[in-house]
Image 1 (cartoon, one colour):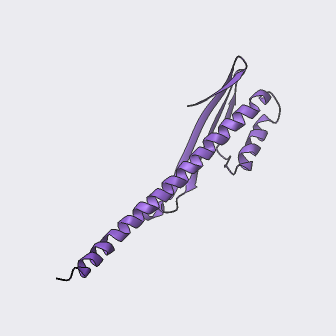
Image 2 (tube, one colour):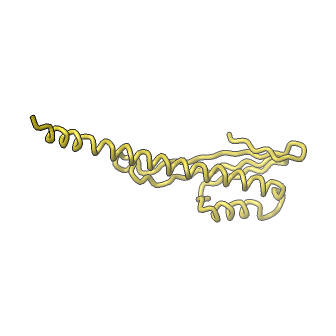
Image 3 (cartoon, one colour):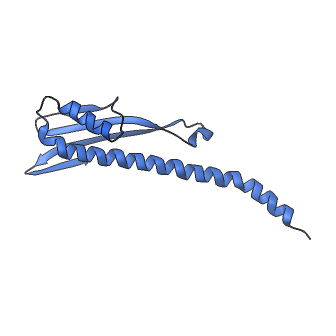
Length: 126
C-alpha cells in the first residue's frame, strides 16, 4: 500500500500551524527585546540623571536620552520630588505577524522610581 499521499496531506495540514507558531515566536521575541531595552534604558537614565534632578533642563535631557536609544517620548511622564524621581513611559510597537490574528500593536508600559538610600541610588520597578 502506498502511503505517500497520506504524508503529503498531513504535511499540508500541519505547515500553516507550524508557520503560525514560528510567527508567534518571532513576535514574542521582538516584544521581549523591546521591553528589555525599555527597562534597561530607563534604569540607566535614572542612575545617571538622579543627581541632576534640580537642574532646569532635567526633563529635556531625559527625553533626549530616550530618543538616542530610539524609544518614543510622546507619553513620558516625569515626577520629581525632593528625594525621588518617577518615570512613566508607554508606547506600542508594531506587530509583524500578529496582524494575521488581528493584533496590530503590542503595548509597552513602564513605571520606575529612583531614590537615594545613604549614598546608593535605588531603582524599583512598579
